[in-house]
Length: 252
Image (tube, rainbow, N blue to C red; front, side, top):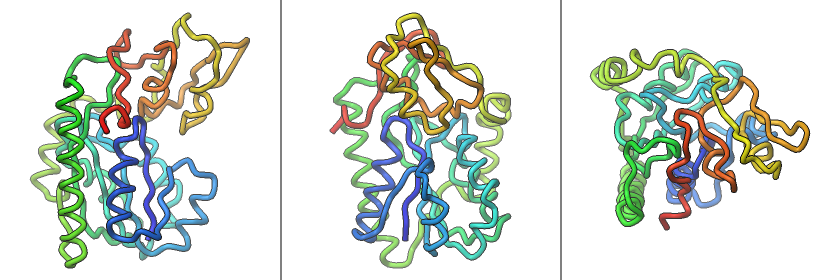
C-alpha cells in the first residue's frame, strides 16, 4: 500500500498520511511531484490517492498525472480521498471515472471537510477556533473510516450517479474554464523579495527566478501552496489580496 497526494496547504497531506498510518503504519506516503513516484507506484497494488476539490473537480495536475501515466493503473486498487472547504459533489468521482477507464479497481472514496485553503478570498473564512474544531472532526472521521476499511467496508462518498449530478450542476459546469487545464492567472506583486521559496515549493515547477524576482509561467494547478507560504504575501490567484495564509499546521 502507498499514499500519494497533491496538497497545497497541508490539508490533504495530513488526511492521506493519517488514514494510511491507521491502515498500515509501515506504508510510504509521497506527493505527486516526488521524483521516484512512478517507480514507487509500479511496485504497489493498493493506492490511496488524495487531492483537494477545486470547483467540484479534481485539480488538473491530478487528472493530467493519471492520464499521462495511463499504463500504471491497470489492476491497481485505488481509494480516493478528497478534501473540501464546503462543497465537493463528486470530488472523488472525478478521478475515479478516469482511473476506471485505465483499468483500476476503485475501492471507494471519502470527502473530508477541512479548513478552507483559498488564501486570497474572504469566502468560507473561519476563526482559528472553528478551524481547529474542523480538523478535530476530520481526524475523528478518519479514525472511523479506517475502522470501517479494516472490516472490509469501503465508504463510497462522491462515487454515485447522484453525486455526479450534484457536482456537475452544482459547480463544475459553471466554472468549467477554471478547471479545464492549467492556468496562467497567478500574480506576483512588487512585494516579492526574491527569496525563491515559491520556486522550490511549486509542485509544477511553474515559478522561476529572473533578476532576483519570482516569475510565474502558464502551468499553475491552483494548489495555493506558494500563496500560503510566501513570506511577503506577494502572490495571489483568484483575488488581489491575501486575507489569510491557510496552513494546516496553524490549526493543530
